[in-house]
Image 1 (tube, rainbow, N blue to C red):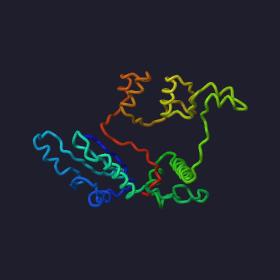
Image 2: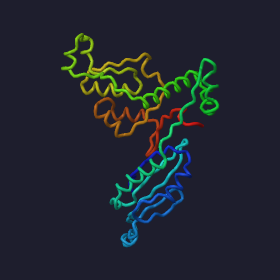
Image 3: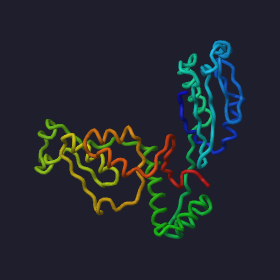
Image 4: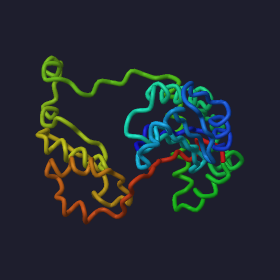
Length: 270
């Protein structure tokens, strides 16, 4: 068995997505068999070919959906060892059909005036649960205001994209500057803010780059989880940043499969 597709569908109505998959989607090949939470797609002769060996998996695909945090997810597995006929074409067409039928939609947050009301009062009608839980936080009013501000900045950047300023220059370009800064040649990379960026900074330093890290707080004071795969951890071990024993000591929980999301609190109405 092999996982072929893991797709996030930005629609909280999982039943609607399931109905569309089962009733409207036409893969264009094979026999579609409706299941409890999706469908199976198999070739008509797959059972005949495998009848001589009960341990051989059938030549078919299995698709199913589920819901987590107001979002629907889709997975497709291949049962057999060999690719399903037109496998890549089916996956591409399915992905395109889902995006066309269930496009990304991000409702505009309401326009507010914080000189006349608090952020809680301004957003309570549209985001009651968001306001409820931010009110329980020690600095909830400030944090929700910042979240709203960043949401507006992100939307403005999407509507009116601007060419980013060039911040990395080659030595040839830097030498032609009219007023070169003698300090600029001391570092190849400058990191503003530690957090998990310190891992990247450490890796680049290990690779030979001259690195400067600027952080206003004592390092390691922030309480946050670090989700990483063993393949990514192995890269840190190979670079000599961690030893295998150190890695085993810092692993709090290990999963075979899972999803980590950092959700903007006011993108979708609750």
